[in-house]
Image (spheres, rainbow, N blue to C red):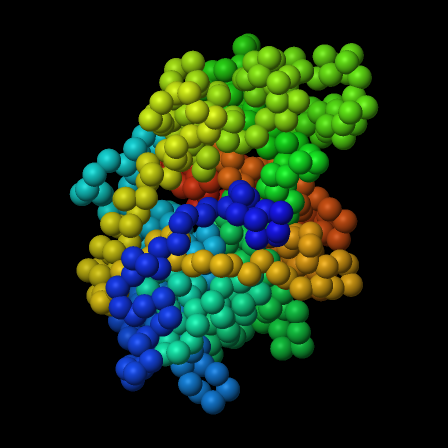
Length: 504
């Protein structure tokens, strides 16, 4: 299988390409016979209470053009900047935030977690239903401790290629990162913030992007030095998600999240009172007896198999017969379908608390992910309403929430520590930390996230070359991939990140 094939089956927040659904301009950017207009920008002024502080801020929503060496516009990146009013404080941080996909706009973190307004969805893993959806003030926004810039990469949100530029020029790990780094440099120049404390971060594939962007910002002699990287629902080592025969790593790193899920859905006899305790047990089993059994392959004895099987059943909530038939290797898609098969239900991928009902109960994998279709309508409505009405930024284009790119280039090039066949971006973060003693990393993971499992993040950032000196902060939440959909976890995430930023 090609690398692209491996990634297509990976644990990223992917959706079918949506460019065909955009209004003008087309997938190839502005019509070539049309003059490229000047960037459109809307500035509005607001105030709100964030972290207990009353903050007046201006919101700048609009386009930044990326240009070639002759000044010709190549692409328009739309961003939403929230900047505290008043004289510029040289000690006030600025945070650059994006989502993932690849192909996702920044609406999820913007309208779910850190923006001054947010859309409300049920905390208890119920479907968001139909509009109108509540759009409310967000006291959990981080505007009391940092200015915030939400960025939509080319092909997402309202961002697009211009003129004859092929949007695929921006659709790849490295190409995307270079464009984001260029945007950050332009923003710092425009707003006079080159010496401000700086944070970058994202969710899901956005953590891949963060690792690639830190290489672009700090990997040359014209560094943009960064104070912190924010990783939410982390995936850096793609080998964990490569579902190919002989690759055992994903089974190991998925197991603690499967255990948390079995615990949540009461599929564990005599379960501990706290999910964290059961996850800790599952970690030890996964990296110990379970990993050893898988690595032995055909050399695993009958006796050893019989020792592992009951424990694997206990941690996953799946019958010993099923696990034996699966050769001790439980794929995520089978897990989603099998755990609640006796109830005729499936569970979510992004958040395994969610339950769905398929066309029938006989299949091997779910029809769809109830944890995604359970929230997407609210976020799309919320983003369009806030941008077009609240921020007075209303382009004559469709906002692409997710799925706005195709044919992604997964090549990261070769280097002294290996080539591109093994796709792992954690070393980029390790190098940046080794070469920037002030760089710290925040990692937030949901217990019920099967798209980017918590043990996978821990594994990736526990390798040789990642400094083990206390500069990585870990936080865990009793929800899934988008932990902020749960009110209690939104407050915890906000508090955790506020402390992380202040701790510099």
